Length: 236
Image 1 (cartoon, rainbow, N blue to C red):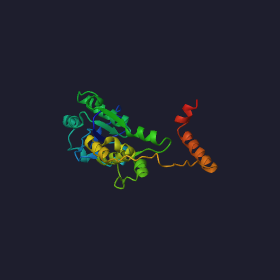
Image 2: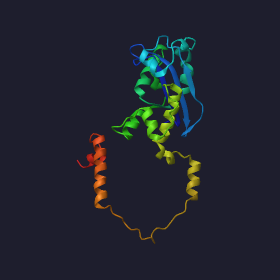
Image 3: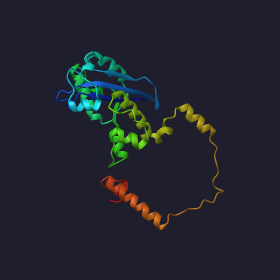
Image 4: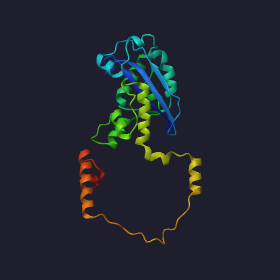
């Protein structure tokens, strides 16, 4: 799996690629070894059609402002060169990938997935972490304290940047697994072994009230996951 991560977002003229809606903006943010590189990609695109009124309210990009922008076919090779072989992260990936596949088809290109190493839907990740909760990009920014105050309207590059920040927060516990080999060797060299055999470690048991509160928390989690918790499956 590629260690080059690209966080991608698009803005479109409407909600349906199959009905003829097109991409009018694409934004990509590059991350390598959990660090943003600044090697980003961003284009406004002439979609060759007008935006639906509801879509215009979301992204605020007027049809007139896109008339002098390049068409997707003029940018496709540069976009694919940039994305080639990378692990792609998209929030609600099925939406963006459907539009990318349609644009690539217009250019006689293969499906989007054939150019990249993997596609991860961060919305699916969030639903697994927070079952039953709101998991829009704005909701995740609020949950993790990511500053999205400049997101008055949707913008592909801004949303890709926010998604990269949210991803770091969602996977913070994996930091130790991603140290390079030199760092790992240095840490191991500096570790000192401690003999615990001489210590008398006492066991502190939960009291009746704490046990009751714990059962309430487990019941809430079980309810939120519609009975799909691990302990439920192990007890059957």
